[in-house]
Image (tube, rainbow, N blue to C red; front, side, top):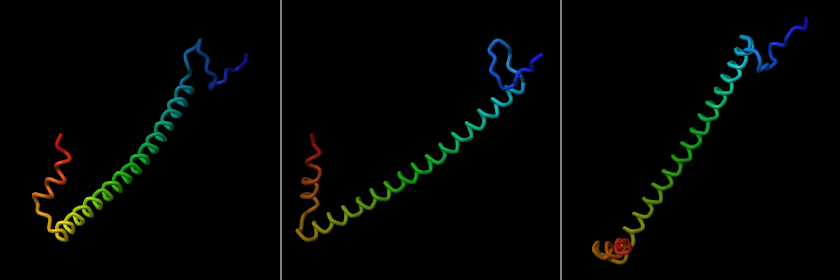
Length: 91
């Protein structure tokens, strides 16, 4: 009588415990790999978001400094500045 290979996928018969265990271990390994890749992607994305937030904060600080300099150099009043800046946003 010919022995059946335990790794053969025979859909007519119920899979052997050996086959189920190997399949379980394979799926567990794949899931672990996916979790590692996901964690790495999240760390990279977090670093990019953090870098963007720092850059945005720097731009905002620079704009505030430039506005203060313009107000000082051209003696612009707060009312004039408000009309110039926020007048464009009124629809």
